[in-house]
Image 1 (cartoon, rainbow, N blue to C red):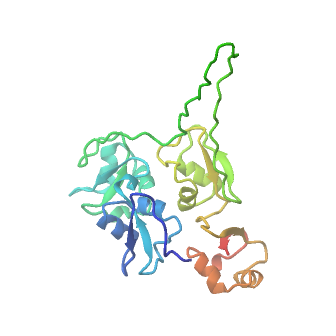
Image 2: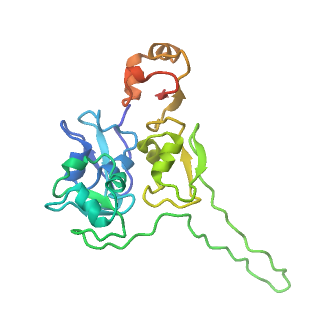
Image 3: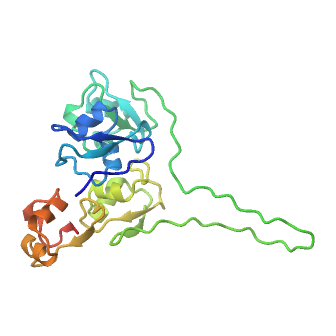
Amino acid sequence: MEFQGRICPRGASYYTWQAGDTAQSVAQANGTTVQALQVLNPDVNFATLPAGTEICLPSQSYTCISGRPYTVQAGDTFTSIADSLGITTYELAERNPGVAQDSIVVGQVLCIPFASSGNGSGSVDQPAEPDTPNLPTPSVPSRPGMPSTPPIVIIPTQPACPAGYTRSTVAAGDTYADLLIRHNVSYRAMRAANPRLSPGFLVAGASYCAPPHGTRETCTGLQPYTILAGETLDTLAADLRTTKGRLLALNPNLLPSDFTQGTIICIP
């Protein structure tokens, strides 16, 4: 997959991946989080990213998708930070995907809840969560003798979901993990398809695009395909008039043995 020439969001910067880099080392060196790197680069598999590839480097506003940034202090552990916030390590890990809990270091940036009593980073005002904008109702000028007209109501439209995805709604009491389990999709696939759906602050009634059942990652610029009974890596390559190597490159998270019935893959 070609990554060169990517366009980064306003405020973000560019970074050229170096040999030996990991998502965690790059995040730590640039004062951001693994979560933010994944959100700004949803088509990138950092585990197999070749040196020389250009990625988007988050600005401070992108550091934490849900919650606020916290800089690890001397003596901190993943468990002690969670305890000081009154949350479980699972809840803290949910806000920090890709972070190795047993190897956090001083200076590393983590995401913690807004309403927090954690030490080290001080209180930070909670920014407003993104929501449907309150659109003003246009008024119609009145003229003498002109009958009054009802106000014009503008109903904002929602962007269509990608092909194969389903429009769904958050139910009361749902957690982000509930959505992943309900649709049997990976965290990365759900976040890539719904960047404005905050994992730590789900609102009942919020609409989102559910990836196809079993999706591990979003097929950016490609088509998702569910392998049928009897199909294999060999037969798929022949049917699609491509090579086995090309299919494996388009699906860097899959093993050759994963190409079995029911697995969703990305195809040209």
